[in-house]
Amino acid sequence: MNRTEKAAETMCALYGQTYKNLTVSDPEFAAIKERLIYGEVYAEEKLSDKLRELIILVVAATNQTMNEVKRHTAAALASSVKPEEIKEAVYHCAPYIGLGKAENAVNAVNEVLAEKGVALPGPSGQTVTEESRLPDGIAAQKSIFGEHIDAMRAAAPENQKNIQDYLSAYCFGDFYTRKFLTIPERELLTFAILVAQGGCEPQVKAHVGGNAAVGNSKETLLVALTVCRPYIGFPRTLNALGCVNEILPENA
Image (cartoon, rainbow, N blue to C red; front, side):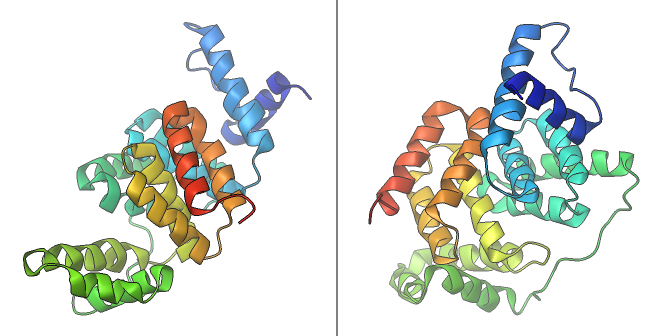
C-alpha cells in the first residue's frame, strides 16, 4: 500500500470519510499534508492510538490551531479515547501555555463532544483539596524528579519561594495529581507541549530526564517527535532532538 492509499484508509477510519478541507482550493498542498501525516507518520510511528492522538491534540492546543483541535478530538473519539482523557490532556496544557489558550482549546473540544452527544461536564478528576494541593504537588514532583526537589525549593531566595510554591501547587498539585491520565502519560504530553512552544530548551531537557525517570524510553520520545513534526516544523523538531540526545546520548 503506497502513501496515498494508506492516507485514504487512515482518514476514512478516523473521520468516516477523506478529509476535504483544502482539496478543492489547494489540492496539491492538501495531498502533501495528507500523505505526510496520514500516509507516512501514522504508518511509521509506534505509539498507541490514544497517545498519538493526545500528543497531536496538545500540540494543536499549544499552537492554537482550533481546527486541528476539533479534528483530533474527533479522531481520538474514533480511536476509543475516552472523553475524560481528551479533556484531561487539554487541561494539562494550562500551566505551560496559559489558562486563556487552554480555555480556547477546551471550548473547541467541548464543541465536538456536544456534537457527538457526550454529556458535560464529565466525571470529576480532582484528587486534591485546597489544603493538600501543595504537599501533594511536591510529592508528584519528587516522584518524577527525585529528592533534589527539596534542595531546589530550599535554595530559592526568600522573594522567590512563592514561585516555587506556585509551581508545586499549581502545575503539579492541580494537574499532575488528577485522574484519567498516568504520570508517564502526563510527562510525555508535557514534553510535546514544551517542544511545540519553542524556546523552552531548558524545560525540554528537564522533562526529557523526567520522562526517562518515569519509564518513557528515548525511543518513545523520538516517536513522539515524529508525531509532532508535521505540526511544529523542522526547526523546533531539530532543537528538541538536540535536547533528547544531550540528556539521553546514544550508546550511553
